[in-house]
Length: 264
Image 1 (cartoon, rainbow, N blue to C red):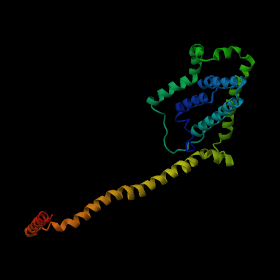
Image 2 (image 1 turned 60 degrees about the vertical axis):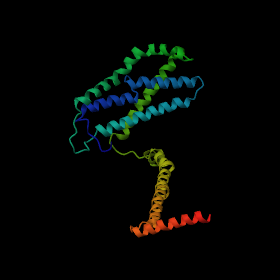
Image 3 (image 1 turned 90 degrees about the vertical axis):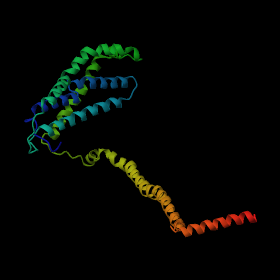
């Protein structure tokens, strides 16, 4: 993404679709993501009011803020500023543009359509399957609290967009010191995964390949072949190809058999 930039000009329709999708992902009303995020955060807050952990709701707000920041960052680094690629970027063909237009339209108005058409009927359909009816919760909830709980996530999302714009409007790198290194290394999960799983698995594979496979399995197979070969060399003297030797062997065998029958 850092190698991109300035694509809003040659790819304005893609930039517009990306902006609509980004606003939906950030949960800004009236875009579709607002409705799903709002219901989740309201449910988390109501659960906390009934004895659950308020930390879940706070974590949801923090996630909404971070999401808005990185969506804004992606928009700026990709489409704003001077063109970083000396090539010739162009708009996607219709086979890609039409699906993007449909997705952008649904991202903009799908939430309103879904809330109006499927919202209340869906809640009524699901009511028998839950002990605490979602409709009952909505009816019993105080309206002032509902307004605050709905407005606060929107304010958090807008604050995230403003923060992302303030941090990345000049396309500069934002360094966070040790925290930045920690996050850039994906919490060192890959390093831990490599140390705990990948490296031991490779060592086990080398052990199986070099010791078990080469010296064990191959050694057994090659040993049987070598044993047969040496046995063949040991008895090859019996097959001389001369008739007199075969006749002498037959005579010796006959004498031994006669001696056995005579002296047993």
